[in-house]
Length: 288
Image (cartoon, rainbow, N blue to C red; front, side, top):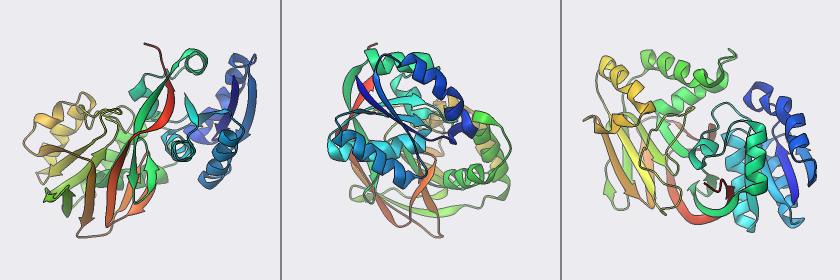
């Protein structure tokens, strides 16, 4: 195989750099080009060059890098694989790619190609979940923290954000119907996972050509804290404060400014339109 590793060296607090020698040994019999990124824009350039050189683009980093590379690969009709190197690695988890680097390399070499959907926020591609409100405030806090908490950083961010949160009024137009709420969050899910394994949209699929829209309306903090742990099993969707809708296009706005986060990175601002591109990405996934 002709491969190009697009590596974010600082992903996962440096995890991608630490596992790179292991990955190179696992792929030693292949034609492999290793290209570290200096920015997300640089990742775009590297991925585009890899597709032009007829190489499989292997995104090695966190969900932010995966989403960025996916946009470039999808636009150019290339083939992509993933070696998890970040903190959450939710997209890899969703498609069954192991966190262990050697096992992930086995998927690169022996997996099968599958076409999966991607989402867009005003034209910017993401692979996982786009969110505004409480969720984006949690992401802002995660980006600022310097505490080495690993995957637990998302739970820390959520608990720390609860104390200062005040309800926002969200407009959420699903197709032609406004299902907005006053409350905590609006989540638009291409994948079903975020925040290091939280099953925020437990029925979301990467191959159904649709987005799952999760709204969480106002409730007392103590009730929200009771519901929050249930996100890890996906059972929160049965609570009355949660509603789930399906759509191919969603228009979002709010009564105060929020950055829109997707795949762990800021991807836009309100107002915005979130849409799905069905089967847009060619991805190597496990055979099983």
